[in-house]
Image 1 (tube, rainbow, N blue to C red):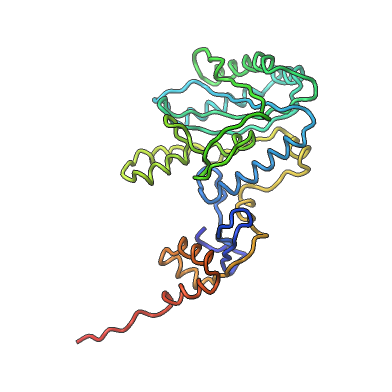
Image 2: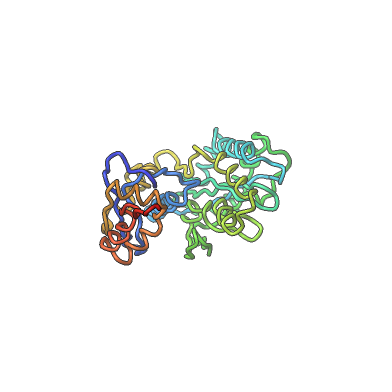
Length: 324
């Protein structure tokens, strides 16, 4: 959000039809759903809509599955996450899962990866929406069959000891309701929001989401531990996929494979009204004086004329002084 995109020669200030707030368009976006407070909300909003559309289009039933593993304060995130994702892979690999899916009527899935940091250290876990065919299957049956596979997968991935049944939770996704706060804005979350916005929502008093760490750091900038933990998270999750749809499910239910995260980050708001356009020379002035936030406030209230009035003061050369 600092440099112009290669196909643009000016920066747009647009106003969101939904929120009424001004924002910049035409700038390069990193497209990081894991670490960017600018790109993540845009990407998450689109992904949540996709998940909701998939649930609405499905003719059968859906359940929400949560998978966790044992962890402690001594576990470094990177190796812990590597073992956890390996357990997730082993859980669905091979004939045992295929046979169980056939018996239980599992037609497809959407899996999301996340982590929190609490009293017992990093807590990587996965939320998965399972799409079930029409015949009725109790959550008890699902838990009974699939927990055994998860227990076996976790052991083969290097997690020692017997898993608690609480490490494998099955809920009715259509009834999951969590009152949480996302990026400082309170609203009601449904199953699709739990799936794609978990890393940026607010945690509990004993557990921090990654974006909680940034919020706490702003409140206590002397606490370098928070930035160190966030850096561990950023490195561990870099390059990983937040959402994994089972083969063919997205195309089946939505008719398309959709946009990449980067494409979403750059395309959001293309239909919103343009309040002002900023030439490259003026954008350089805005960046030089760190006026990005102030410019949005001015344009939102006073439009392009307000922006012009603001920039006039910065375009003027410094006054000459008489030296004795």
